[in-house]
Image: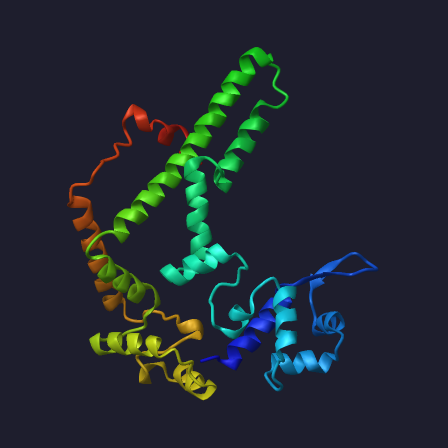
Length: 284
């Protein structure tokens, strides 16, 4: 079911992220309602009423806004959680449930692993190497091989780090206890609980996908002790009870230790010569 409030929030967010360049001054700024009204050739009040859900947006205007903001009508209407126009990202998101940001991160890691892309830290490392050798009094005969060797070490480090991150993700996601691990991790990060009953309440409240009313939110903030489970904006939670928080951490740690104790297909020894890049590129 389409939530009109979500549509309004998206329209406001996308408008503020849409950059307009002033024709006279050349200064860029976030688009105002006046800017969008000018583009759509309508009154400012119409844009304002769209963003307050006082009038319904007709199909043609919705399509125009989607194109203007570089997204899809499905995203605006809440049918899809993917803002990108990339069909592949949309398919992957629907198939896996991952967000657009998570998919892009995994894709970047894959590119870094293959050497198609350098991480930002690796780029900075190479910049430092280039700067170090720039203006050196040494001849190129001695300078370039040493510089190129350090750059290659930095690149190899970037690839190996990305590979290790992907291997860790693949290993964790393939284990039998992954679902319990992720549930505990979620509760540790996002759930506000004071006892075991509140843990279940938090999960039920999250699954209901219903935002609290302003009165309920205000009451919850004024009397935090009266409500052990408070849903914050975006269904994010915070842990109040440090003891419960500690229990979640112990549970997560026990699962990680169990996985670590299990024999793996390949054990990486960071002290071997094959992994010498770790010592040489520790700041990559």
